[in-house]
Image 1: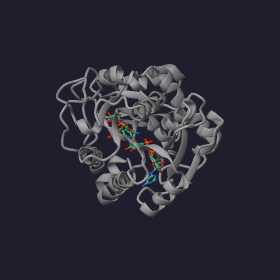
Image 2: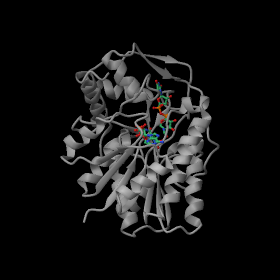
Image 3: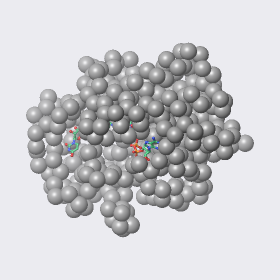
Length: 344
Ligand code: NAD
Ligand code: WQD
């Protein structure tokens, strides 16, 4: 029988790509999402790709009674992948309580209910933001956690600590914490992708919106960093590669292959790419010019960070394989699709 997996925030960017990979791998998926940062028709896109429609309930993870009803309605959920969270760094600075409430209460509700419903595993979406500016690059999982630069970042650190404390207390479930670097790109089918609301804060959606003419020009936040071309360096990871790591994490937890009851993995490519290199690559692969100007540094930005993914490569048997060229091309095709569908 197919094992049932609950995906919170499964209508969102990374969640939707993961639902596709879980279904391709033979899992039965139940998606919950409060649609605070996504659209219900993402489920149609998932169905067009996989020819399977996942069960979908509009539900807020802060609604504990609603979660109880969900576990009653879908008995036998074996694992949870918890994506649901608010994720806008800048907004979190102005609405800290909203972020602490949403991102922390959601996790606590799930962790509390898991033993009651015999859920054996939870995979948690964390972030490279927990490393701040690492002292050593590439950064591995043993690098120290640095003081968070935003309430959003702090919610990731606190959630990691909550998971560790709860597992240490001897609960009957296990966890894998995945620290994503910078996820970009869209599904090659162009049926699902990133749907930023309002003005994008992240580089790639801002870039593709500029390339298509929604934005006048892209601001490059600083060219006076201590990097070869002066712009910041990140590790941009293809969203489908990222999604596949979640399936491996679930397989690992449910198959009892974990080395300890809580494991942490970096999910990145291991390659650092500067903002200016990324723009050049986009222009080369799409043939589209991106108007941009250099402006002042953005407050709170990290100068350079990229992953050492060796532990995930070795222990999970997972590796990012998609090239930056193909990934940026997928972002562009997705932007064109959003226009075709008159969404943006
Ligand atoms: P997203 O906003 O596209 O997806 C999150 C989904 O969760 C959205 O569909 C939203 O409507 C839903 N949601 C939010 N709060 C909810 C709640 N209380 N109950 C139910 N649904 C709720 O974001 P994403 O980029 O797919 O990120 C997924 C996860 O990965 C988040 O936890 C995010 O913090 C983490 N993460 C993202 C990045 C990134 O750059 N995208 C990097 C590191 C970590
Ligand atoms: C990438 C680079 C910017 C926009 C954020 C969160 C982090 C994680 C991923 C969730 C930086 C530059 C950007 C623009 C630019 N999310 N940039 N012009 O800052 O690495 O990380 O998203 O956990 O927590 O902080 O990603 O895409 O915003 O920026 O020059 O208009 O692009 O300075 O160097 P970031 P980003």
